[in-house]
Image (tube, rainbow, N blue to C red; front, side, top):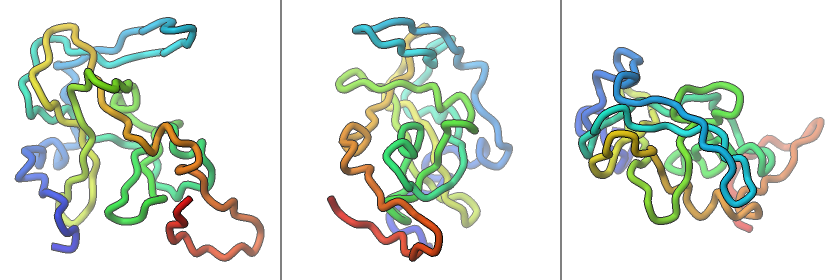
Length: 168
């Protein structure tokens, strides 16, 4: 297949979710987090009941776009298997996956690329069992926290539209 080492939706167990375009809404709920270390964390995603390890909660959705400034990556999941500056950006459009917060050490879920019926998708999968009321957390990765690594050359009128990756 053209996606190299990217697993198939069948091997990850999410083919039916992607085929139907569904999300495991009955497994999760949204709650206000509040202020942590002086920062308003906003909303978070929580387990409504115990969720087994390896459960795919749903697809991370948003607008597929090229990153043109560091802010483009704040709600974006990059697709380095295709292009390091291609992101699924959920800032303005997306689903409940956009509410998943970061943890350095307590993350219990992951976003991963899968291929399904010839198209690349990003899904959220639990990595261990979540207890009832436990927050769904992922590790955003080093690139998210390093603004310089998210920097791209701004595009202007008549700019060369070559989006090849430029290491910092």
